[in-house]
Image (cartoon, rainbow, N blue to C red; front, side, top):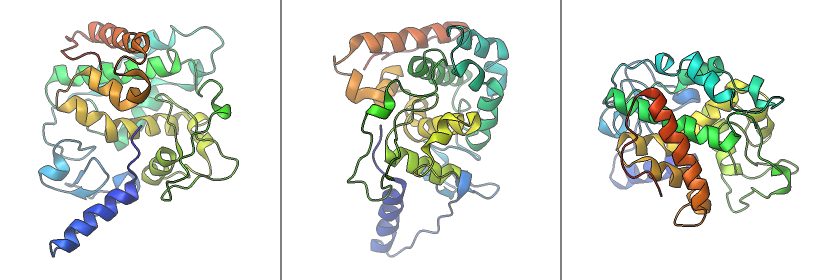
Amino acid sequence: MASLSFRNILMTLTLVGILSGILPEITLGQNCGCASGLCCSQFGFCDTGNDFCGTGCQSGPCIGSNGVSVADIVSQAFFDGIVNQAPAGCVGKSFYTRSAFLNALSSFSAFGTIGTVDDSRREIAAFFAHASHETGSFCKIEEDDGASKDYCEESNTDYPCVPNKNYYGRGPLQLSWNYNYGAAGEFLGFDGLNNPEIVATDSLVSFRAALWYWMRNVHPIMTTGQGFGATIRAINGDVECDGKKPDLVTARVNLYTDFCNQLGVAPGDNLRC
């Protein structure tokens, strides 16, 4: 997953402004915190114009908004069709709910609403394909044997690891690493470094954290038409792409094409990474 931290981005933008003689007037806060009429950019800054309302815009009057209702596309029947694929007794079957997903969207109004209606359906299909793959059709809340793995990037001083806390995969997209927990918590208003467990105990936080990662790293790929294969690279490319694990790539592609069929949209080109 992406390793560039939120604070580094802020410092970079501020330095650019100083060097050009203009200190950027940028507002940010929990849930982006933008005033009415301002866009929340890909990296959580509030303003207007193409840099904020264009590619990567997360919420607000984003360029290309099409007025699609995600709730109409992600029907209860569609959601249940995924969850019902999980074996009986899976902890995720009662944890992941359509209502939690829809409530989480309040922070990310651009999800599934940019471009054509077909573009919206493809983004929704892609999100649920990855979530289904990562969780086994919403069966798992946490990564298998996650506690035995080291997801602490000690060199990241912006989001330092807390002793005795583990940053393994949790939630619909299996959020991992200290720098993702820290940045997601900073944006969404929870203590991701001291309380990473909340992503596996609060279904609303779980979906919000997954959508935070999606909007920061994957949504811009979908809205610029790079294809599903590029989304695989953004989520787990180091492990699966470039011939490393073609069976896992195939599994993701199969889920995506199945959901596209269910939503009545062509999957598009460039399906593999």
